[in-house]
Length: 279
Image 1 (cartoon, rainbow, N blue to C red):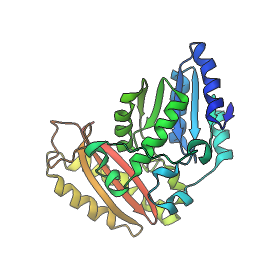
Image 2 (image 1 turned 30 degrees about the vertical axis):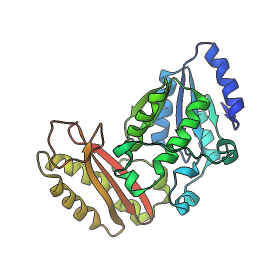
Image 3 (image 1 turned 60 degrees about the vertical axis):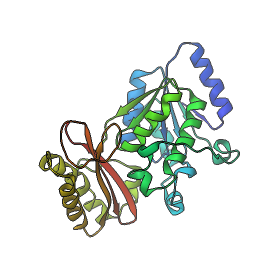
């Protein structure tokens, strides 16, 4: 496994593989890797000749500077995990490499970028688009793998990729045994927060079970009451949206695909999750 820190070197190495007819799979990460990330690596190793993963904590997608400061960083163990999964190349740049000058590009995702995460984290998706386009330009993969836990981000990247000849592969959410969606932020939870956090997924399962063909407002009230009864949890938002357009809906009906999305604070740690209502 090669660890590469500079874009020029990365492009040179990958161009050699490309000339040999190799297919390239790419998994962008911010490190602090867990089995959810590794499931994406495994899928690429199975599918592609070359697997590239990036590790870079991108500052432009953090609207909260304390969140950026506290984001877990475990580079040594990350490298070991990627090597164990037969990742071919790790691209691990620093801020100077990725932002040699300020990136003033502005992306317009329409309503898709204004709801849920876009509403609660202004500028977040613009920062995501800045770094993802930089990484796509550097790696030029045939496929890029993203987990469905970041449901809205995945939808936005699928829109963004219209400008690239890249297949976006959406991979299932990987969960702990108690249902909590795996996340790098889980390592920041206190014992009490970790004990309460699985209620997020249990609540989504109950919505899926109990609220088909009912009014969304009923589901919202149910979720708020259920989540906020846990002392360490506080609901930020719960929304049921069209799975393709991300437009919020008023009725939970099977005429269109629907996804229930949620963001919850466990203490100071922000957790997100989602569930397909009709799968």
